[in-house]
Image (cartoon, rainbow, N blue to C red; front, side, top):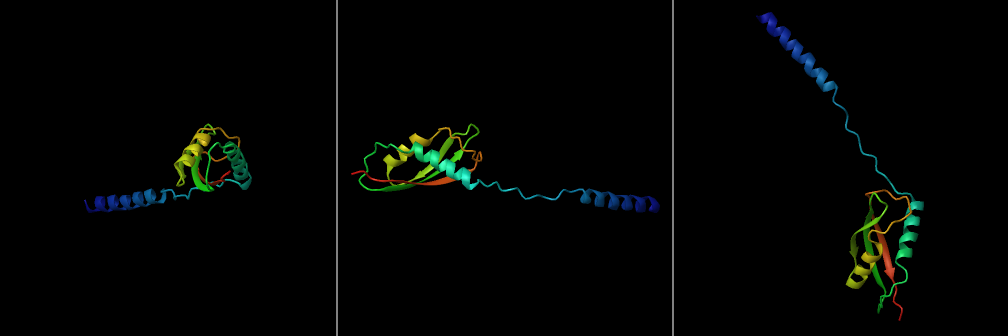
Amino acid sequence: MNYFKTIALAGLIVFSSVLHANVPEPTNPVKKITSEAVKASMNKELGALLTESKIKLEQTVSATVSFTINSNSEVVVLDVETENAQVEQFIQNRLNYKKIKANALKGQTYHLPVVLESRL
């Protein structure tokens, strides 16, 4: 009986060390970075969408637009940070769900500073 317990204990030790040896090492995810050329292309396309505003502004207004690109290469506006509600609505209407040609990373959040100058 004592011999059986010794063999069982030795088997458990060997079995547990084999299980521990097969645990995969966690890997760090690769951070994807959008190239400067793609960013410049996106800025140019989005800037073109924001031209020809019919908004009458008394002073220059700045905003920061947070957006992402969906699987259909469309801009999805997440947030527009500005104190002017009219400018916020204008930016959302002009950019939301518009297709772009730039090869941007899908699902990544981008931040675009926008300045609308007054035309008095």
